[in-house]
Image (cartoon, rainbow, N blue to C red; front, side, top):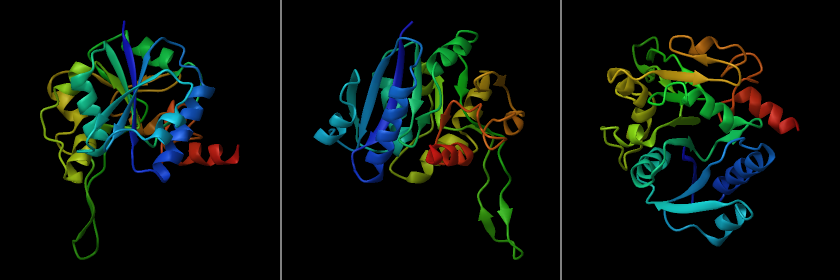
Length: 237
């Protein structure tokens, strides 16, 4: 079985370089536990010498995307350009939390190949309004977060709704009314939130013991800017 691990690295420097080094350090620290190809998407143009130096010593392949759709556009572009049985998608903010992460991902993927799996799930939320009836928060529909997710790339490549220069389409892919999770449910695919020791279907995502936004988040295999407890622990080490 061919497995590709994909990391999106914007070319614009600054905080993107800091985040890429954090991902690189976690990738080096925590062995994947399963053979794979590493692909890095230089999002916005050709990778700089500094970007390549960041991943020096890691056997990585590079491809480019024009930054249309930001990280989501890069995920879709790679899904349509690369051939693999299973692809793991990591955005620039992501970092790994323990060894054997890919072995765990492959073990659950083997149980139902044509499903969507993710490290963090969200049951969704209704739109919130102030006392005058003005919307203050948009509605989020149930979804697997794009922190770290995996699937057969042919599934992701077939997503039919446009992801364009309009940044709103990026968020619609994740948690809009026709988001990736909802679209796959419509096609009768299973969708799972996977932790180090469990596998959960909706509507159980918000209550996973030590999962996303619960307990100490120690069951989350890949963190990002929203895994607050994992970030706090990371900053203390």
